[in-house]
Length: 178
Ligand SMILES: Cc1cc2nc3c(=O)[nH]c(=O)nc-3n(C[C@H](O)[C@H](O)[C@H](O)COP(=O)(O)O)c2cc1C
Image (cartoon, rainbow, N blue to C red):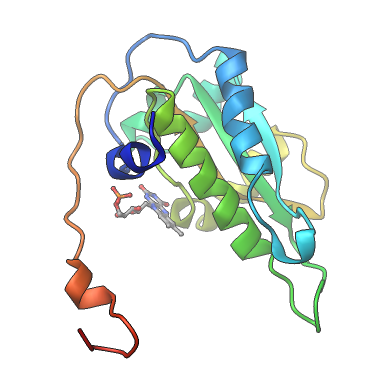
């Protein structure tokens, strides 16, 4: 799929998945897209745990009953960062930005391969969910799951929120200009 087609087709899918499996080769290709993302100072701070054990996928998915995509996912990709980030440039850490770049690359790869996903991040931060999932995945104490991407073949179409038009968010040369 052309890059711009993937950009246009990607959206947050929270609906049901079909029973079609997601082969390991596709999961690897998706994570390779994450590994290829840019990172501040090329520190490559994000690590990935690919969850394709059906029992483990189910245990994690059932923690979020309102999100059918998570509940019915065929696989999950956990993007993992440090709890206490290391400064890589002038006292700054870029690990959150690194992780976001990897997530978007993976979402585009997921779309290009005909799957759907949703960036699950806010939900992880409440009620100790990131810690609980980190425990299930055997993360060392210094690591935390920052983003979870469910992956599967969508059983239908979900709602696509409208994006504000170009003219309200982007301008040439000066803020609010032409
Ligand atoms: C940093 C970040 C955190 C997000 N956290 C969640 C989340 O916890 N649960 C969820 O269902 N969607 C989450 N999303 C998805 C957004 O709700 C979604 O991207 C937004 O509504 C725009 O819709 P679209 O992705 O279909 O364009 C998150 C997205 C981002 C970028």
